[in-house]
Image (cartoon, rainbow, N blue to C red; front, side, top):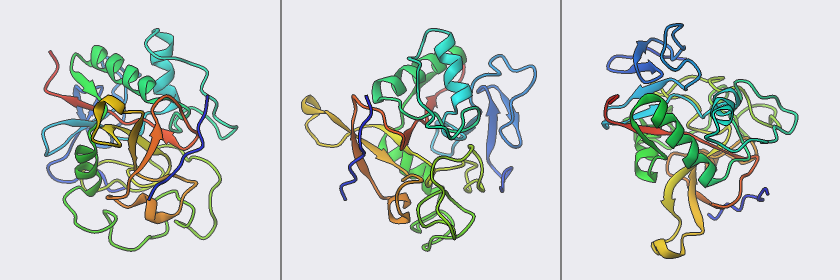
Length: 235
């Protein structure tokens, strides 16, 4: 089932940033190493906050590796926009958690969905402006309804725009991203989960670092994708 989202409300290699292929090998731009122990896993960026985060939203190719291994549900519709390096969509919150668990097993790390606070810290990347590049929407920086001269109907391949100061791409726009957090303080009644980042369908205010929305955790959407954080070092 799919939901209709209800909103309520390339400069890599910078000093101090390490991009790791399969959580193991430091690389300049997040490319997978040929000898990586998990070439189908997303590159990770080790953040100053002490966790590693997938450099981009999880792509269809990366998701389908989990499907083939039996760790994730399959059958996600790409709506004709393309698969491969575009962000996987139509994934429920539980499906996203299953991917994080599978990835953690492959990398021998504890991997999970980010909290809202972790997500915001990563999106801001040490900045205090509305977007990491400044307070105003700027052409060529993100995929959203008013982020360019003509809106793009659908997703774009991961990494189509510059990385933020911490080496992460597409934290603003393209697709919303599931977080671990409940929308309400009552965890026992936690039907909806917080999503962050905005998407191609929505206007730029929804792509601000602090903007937030919610979605029924049981339902996927063509506006929502997955990003994962991993703790510690490989066991």
